[in-house]
Image 1 (cartoon, one colour):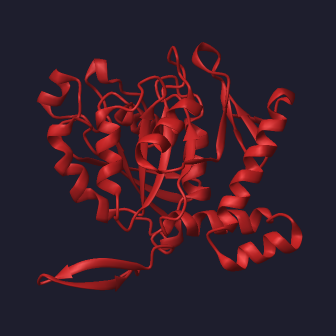
Image 2: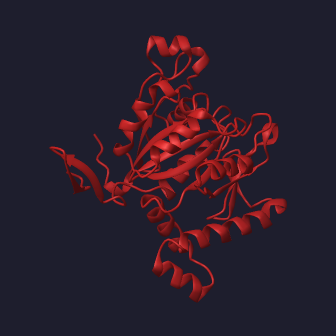
Length: 295
């Protein structure tokens, strides 16, 4: 069995409302990473994570499920929590097991109860948070409105790292504003001319947000007027791990558009166990901290 350095591990908890597409997202990730040789579908009752007979019958997750995929020499451990409020206990107990909770929001669903509960359960928890706006292919999909609703209702201020290219039936990819590249139908290209200004503005916003989380980066930002890509990525990962910044991404799990880009974001930008060195635990009801280590 292959062993992975701590820096090559990613432990991700998928949270969000029922129907936001968490299980479908996981299924796409498993398939694209080669962990499975066929793409399961909820309607056909053959997904990897909804395997219980009652889950298949109801076409919804009823308990916490765990799977993994290898992507670009990294091991990604995925925990898929049910979105229905009656089962939120499974979400709560899974939070300490991961470095990042990836909150999946329905781009056309508004501020749903399950989304609200997921964000509330993450409050004051020592875990990184990220937002993935899914179902970008749906009618009335609106990533800006979705992020604005999260901000208005929770005070969280997700900062885009990916900008969508198109929406609804024209959604075809994303712009990675850190690398300043477009990913259209899984192929990398230059940023479309009509999105270049928005990408530049989004990169400047992200750079400023990252710099504000670290004094050394802030000094470098003031001195040079910008951060290098290396500084930006390292600072982003540290800020996420410390709960100081919430990045936002976009995709369509149902069609698979930009799911590969999400896998890239997980290994490139989200923290590893190495980035979260101190873990709060209870030792016979006494709080203490332990240090993450391979052993």
